[in-house]
Length: 159
Image (cartoon, rainbow, N blue to C red; front, side, top):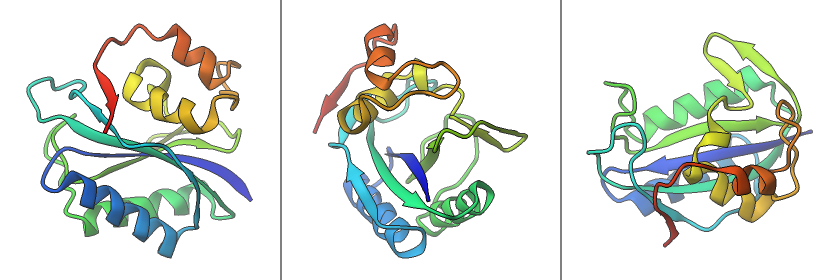
């Protein structure tokens, strides 16, 4: 089994409902959620004029290969109305693979660990809440260390 951390995000429509539906689909089609962070409200990152996001990190264990996990996640996003029109565009749901155990994967459409996670407060805050001691396999620092080193000053607050 592989210890997986996923970041969920939504900034369109009923954001809380989209997060809940994403978790429901993940549990039905991938694996039960072991831990979940609080839900955090976050200013839009990258495209700063977009509506605020709700973000949550979940942890699960699965024996699915990373590629199959990605395919299932992309199918869930489409099912929940995700449209990819522009980089950092608003979305009903976004599901990112943050970590796939301690594996390092470099493929054109699959980068694990997520290459930007350690720079983004909206990712590190919820991740630190449920996995502060988890060690980033590339940076060799735990999540709490990464949180303490953040320079991202976007507002991230529990809902």
